[in-house]
Every structure is written in structure tokens, then in C-alpha cells.
Image (cartoon, rainbow, N blue to C red; front, top):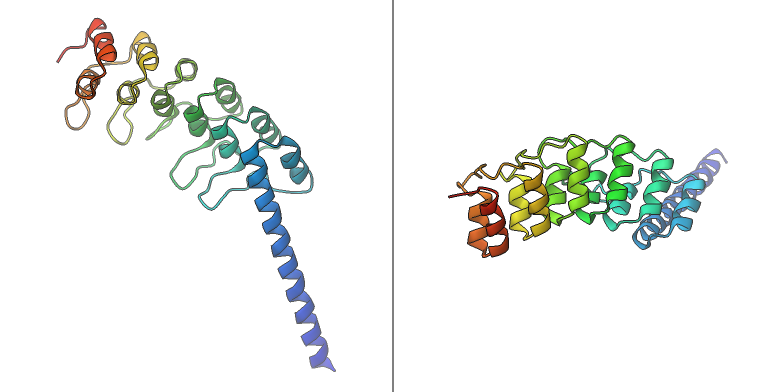
Length: 215
């Protein structure tokens, strides 16, 4: 009789574990779907029922990171209100602020900074991402908040070089206005001007030349 009770207990316990696991998977899938679609009501409902605001996908992208990347302003507001961690990083080392800079929504960038995200970072920094995406408003805001205009990314390029490489004329102009140093050389000796010329970006090359860049 004792062995039978043990068998029944283990069987029931296993069923409960399987049910809980299946339920957790459903919540996880619903959260990711809600974030992708920008569905505030769905995400709020799941959080109200105990879902973790720092839930992350297999790549380490948290709900906040994904919301910031997709430009879902209301979701970012909701998640920050639920104490989502702005310092979390994904498998590539990106955080929510960096991902918001790729999207280029200055409202989200501002919210993240106001909740503790750091504009000044070692390695790949938010300013590098903003320059690459060409968001002038974000570039100006980050610099106002202490971002280093000439810091080198891990590939040896400055924000100015990255803006040139991605053919973002207005971003280049904004960085030059903020006194970005066009004399900096990348590991292979490239400058912002040489990159513009090599890639055939005549308007950017002329802009750099007017600012005083020479080879």
C-alpha cells in the first residue's frame, strides 16, 4: 500500500510539473507575441497575473529591449513602471537604450535615461548606434547627457565614421556641429573623409571638407 501511494504521488506530482511547465510556456509565448505586436493590454494583463517584467527570449532580449527596438512607446512606459531592469544586456551585449537608439525614437531614449540607463558606456555605446541609424534628435540628446562624441567602438570607428559609413548626411552634420573630431583614424588609417570618398558619398565628403577635413 505504501508503494502504491508513492507511485500515485509521483504520478500526480509529474502531472502538476508538466502542467506548470506548459502554462509557463504559454505565458512566455503570449508575452513575446504581445510585445512584438505592441499589445499593451495583453502584456499588462500577463504582468498583473505575475509574469516577470524582465522576461527574456533565448537570445537574452528582455521585453523592455524588444519594446524599445520596435518603438512601442506605451509598452516601454508600462515596463518601466513595473521596474523592468534598464541595465540588462542580451547575448550580444546590447541593452534597451542601445536598441532604442537603433530605432531612433528620442522619446523612448529619454525615458530610459530618466530611469537610469547610461548614455556613456564602454565598447559599443548608444551614440554609435544612434549615428549608425542616423537619428539626429537622439544624437543631440545623448551628447547633452554626457555621451563621448569621439569614443571608439570595438571596430575602431567613431560615431562620425559610423554615420558616414551608413550614408547618414544629417547625422554627420549634427556630429560635426557638436565638434566631432574628423581627424581620428581607424585601425587601417581611414578617416571620416576617406570613408566618404571611398564609398562615393559626395555630399558627405563635401560637408566634411567644408568643416576642414583634409587627407
